[in-house]
Amino acid sequence: MNKLIVFVILLLHPTYIKTCREYYKQNLSLKRKLFTSGILHEYSDVMKFQECLRYCKKHHCLSFSTNTETGLCRLYSKIFNDATGAISQDGVAYYYQWSDTCLGWRQSCSPRPTGEYDIRRVSKQDEPQHVLCDMDIAGGGWAVFQNRFDGSVSFDHNSYSNTFGNFSGEFWLGLDMMKTMCYDQPCEARIELEDWQSVRKFAGYSNFHVGWWGQRYQLTISGYTGTAGDSMGDLNGMKFSTANADLDMSAGTNCAKLGQSGWWYNDCGLSNLNGPYTVDTGTEVDNAMTWWTFHGSYRPLKKSRMMFRAIYNN
Ligand SMILES: [Ca+2]
Image (cartoon, rainbow, N blue to C red; front, side):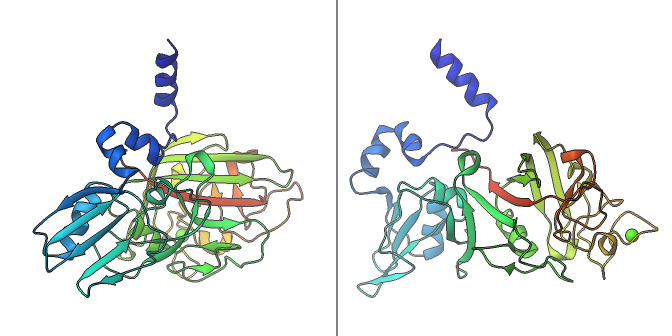
């Protein structure tokens, strides 16, 4: 009976994330490897770095080594603290640590607190990208793409393609990174909001994706759950507008100019979380950081934290 209840709770709780230990507990032979050598799998005759990398992704490994002379490819289920990049061994073997998502870091087998992590794309050997991963909210493993709480960083920009602000304070991750990180796998989103009376609410979306620059960063967003109400569902399919690039659905209004920010405006829509940072005086404001369904009005909010997370079967 108890097992049944737990099972039902897990089914009803979409944000439940298995930890590394829970994941490997299901397979005793993998568990034994994990807590002894940490080697998950070994392959011989792997003469290319990319091939070993593909095996790593397939087995959800968090680090791997390749030796292109002997053809030995080793996959590890944990991160080694001394491996901060590539380390040459005997001149031919290379050791990498990587994860292509915050969720991958979250599921690694040593404690991973909220903070800055390097994310490496699975399909490329590019330099790792630096992101802020939230490991506390709803199971953790979130890449934070917008963080505002004191108005110290201006969000009134002509371009939102690149990162502005800084990860220890307020920032915008940038549309190019958002597009890239949800390119190889589906993502979900979560938006944490707080008003000036310290009331907290959130909005979750089970489907979240940003198109590339040529698509004008078109937004895919659906599957709302939460307490803040759905103020972004009406933006599904919208392109990203700025004051000098009116791509919204309002013929008579430049919504970005009215809202003084860049956003996936519709006509113009129910949310404006990149809007100017202002104190709530109890009245509605067109050009402020707002989420209409929070109060049922366009009153300024105090805090906004927008995040996305990869979805994959674990
Ligand atoms: Ca317009």
